[in-house]
Image (cartoon, rainbow, N blue to C red; front, side, top):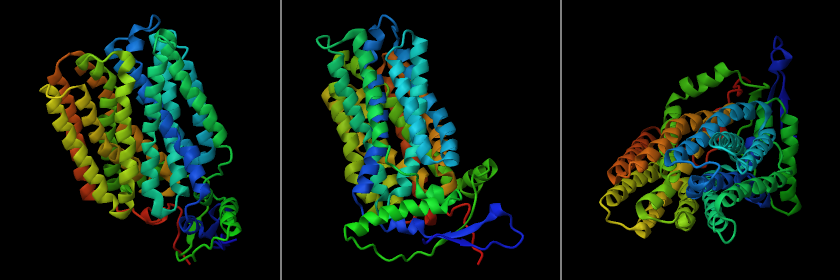
Amino acid sequence: MTTQALQPPSDASARERRYSTDIPARLDRLAWTRFHTLLVLALGITWLLDGLEVTLAGSVAGALKASPALAMSTTEIGLAGATYIAGAVLGALFFGWLTDRLGRRKLFFITLFLYVGATAATAFSWSLWSFLLFRFFTGAGIGGEYTAINSTIQEFTPARYRGWVDLTINGTFWLGAALGAVGAVILLDPAVAGGDLGWRLCFGIGALLGLLIMLMRLWIPESPRWLMIHNQPQAAERIVADIERHYHERGVELPPLRATPLRLRARDHTPLREVFHSLFVEHRRRALVGLTLLSAQAFFYNAIFFTYALVLTDFYGVPPGKVGWYILPFALGNFCGPLLLGRLFDVVGRRIMISSTYLVSGVLLAVSGYLFQQQLIDVTQQTLAWMVIFFFASAAASSAYLTVAETFPLEIRALAIAVFYAFGTGLGGLIGPTLFGALIASGQRINVLYGYLIGAALMIIASLVQALWGVAAERRSLEHVARPLSQVDDR
């Protein structure tokens, strides 16, 4: 065992027991193996669910308008998107706090269970208000998933892979988007289901996927880093030793440890006063960066994507049942961006890559918005333009979650993700879909252009903030990027 208890000062209480551990260094020295791949698949598939939900909301917009039970207007479609985001915001805050307090593993089961129940209930909505209520709780489950899953993946992934893995996982959102698009095309086809039954079956896809994911997660252990900082070093030691045993059984020699062991003070939770001091006083510059990055990408994405189907139907005359086919190339660009650019975030560096992808996304959106307003592009060219824009924007948005997940102390990682996700999504995600829904409902292309220019300006501002104050976290241990609150230096 390499986790050792240290003798505390004679006047210290039992609660202030101190110990030394090299668990972070042992996790960071591991080569990528089947363990990491299975972990990423079982946890990272959460983004697929979010992509599925967001795409379904847009793809079935026409069917929701025509539904005898709901008969939603264009403005109400935008309101439904905002309701989903509101649930995600509040869910992230509540479940993020619980994730840091109760553990990663408990929460990624609780939040998934909530998601499955709520999205299944959405399929049985009988009125506008029941639909909005179930969308709220679906969002709450997804928001909670973001905090628990981001924390767990960050804490298991070796430092040299962290950027690429995190971006690629976030990019799988768009596999869910593609699945939702294809599912909507098939199920909204009158020859298959169509009408009121079609959109209800679409939401059933998410519930079935969620149940399968729950089974995939049964083998995943608690995060050793979470156990380490919550006065359970022996449990953390057993998990890491078990992971290392698989390397030894396959004859893989682990490199020697070079990092100095961490010396920690035992604690079972972090007081809220210390949480807020760390977030908004000690790390206030990092907080500004995280808030800016998440707010800009949330407005950019939610404003455009939640109303994507409305642009296609209202301005280009695309039949509601065919909207899904236009989402497929859009989703491809979004998935390929993080996949192909992700390695550069570890090699070239965070500051350069994050600021560059935000800047390019903003400029391209402004240009394409002008072409849209001038009616210089048709629906195919518009789709190709969005495909290119979001190739860069997807990497940028994914890097925002990477930033807030790795630049704050271990004890408050999940809550930090939640706070900045909530603020960013609340500012950008709630305003965006509602505003764009109203702009599109006006029927005036110039009004839609104004919305695009707002999104572009926010992305460019975020690029500048990141370039000035972003943290170079590439290939560095999480504990070196942000010192644990429970770390002690006494000898």
